[in-house]
Structures are given as structure tokens and as C-alpha cells.
Length: 62
Image (tube, helix red, strand yellow):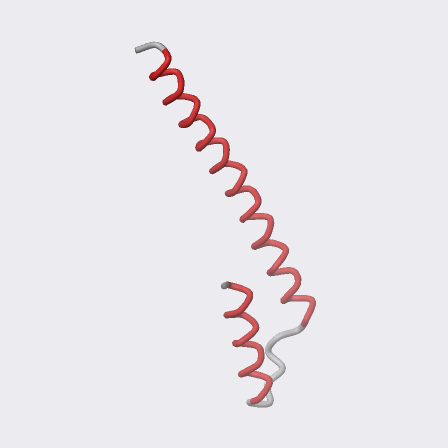
């Protein structure tokens, strides 16, 4: 979704004759976004695993 938005932004600015979007900046931005997403994903999976484990333990020992 973010990728699409940035791409559209670049395309519109190129049509207007401004070279707003250097590829290097674009790629750098994407890498940062990807790293953030990966970190978030790992944390979310950890949290989910803990919750699943907690509910398992609760059911087992009730």
C-alpha cells in the first residue's frame, strides 16, 4: 500500500516535469519501511505466540 502511494506520487511529479523521486532515495525509503515492518512482524508473532501459549496453559490447569 505504501509502495503504491509513493509510486503514484513519483509518477505524478514526473508528469509535472519535476524529478522529485530519485531511485536511490526511493529504495532507501523502502528498505527502512521493510526493516520496520519485519521488526514489527517479529514482535507481533512473539506476542501472539505468548497469548496462544497462555490460553493453552489456562485451559490445561483449570
